[in-house]
Length: 130
Image (tube, one colour):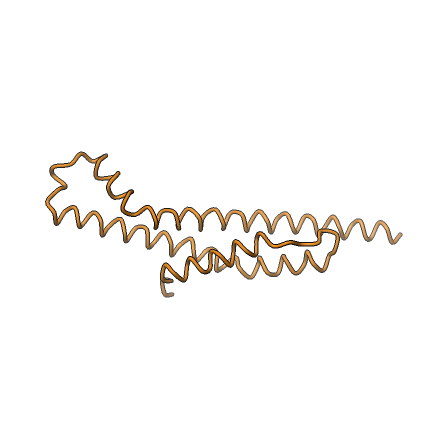
């Protein structure tokens, strides 16, 4: 499986965010079902954005560590300083990775909520039809 480029990950994170934030008529089972289908279809994509964004973050950290090594600065700096430099220089990758994690969790929670709501609406409809 190929690693997604960072710009593609950003696009997919926006798609996932838009889907989670979408408006749903919570009294209409069809609307809820469609949202469940949409979010379910994005679950695999969401997991991939998490994995690939973490890959890019680790690769960026490694590049920065090697750059410090090449500059012969590793021996002169305290470990906490090295960590801070690397974290600062890879902040964008860390932000993307954190966002992917949070959106993935939000997607799972939204799916659970919609499934519960659908069960409730179905029960209400069945109860009302008796």
